[in-house]
Image (cartoon, rainbow, N blue to C red; front, side, top):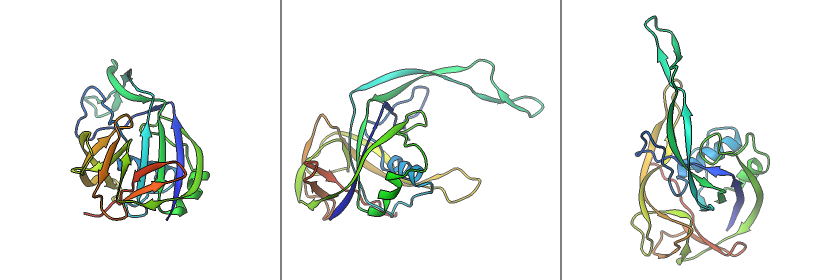
Length: 225
């Protein structure tokens, strides 16, 4: 089958953990599928539905760091007027250094928005600006087992090991004036680039070998609850 392969690089990347967010900002070791849908939406200039494409990816970075951020907080005075707290807060923010994201999509219609994006790609926050290095069409072959790395696979998975995370697949953002809501949460194993896993028994059509990049990828199908 044919896949669209885009290589995206950046200076920093930050992937928020939805259930662990307090004074210090922690980053997921790998991007959630909801973040990749948001990235595609920014490039296409519209909201991308979860069922428009399957997504495979391989993520790596040159390490992680911790930054110190200054935050300005809003306040409402006794007269009901909105203002800014005079004393800013600070917090620590964990981030990836020099990230590289190899993104694979089975919907080849997305090639045009990757080649001519509506807005700059960001790997997490708006300040995590990235750039698209290459976009091409590649052939992929279905396999029953293979070594994967730098990706998320559903937990449990035969042969895979890594950090167990609860992450969103997608969000509902269809009600004007309301904040978005989580459409689906899944448990995943974060198989880091540095610790590949030999997996087998993945559902049919979801484990693919890409000869052009010599990679085996997990092609995730975002399903409705």
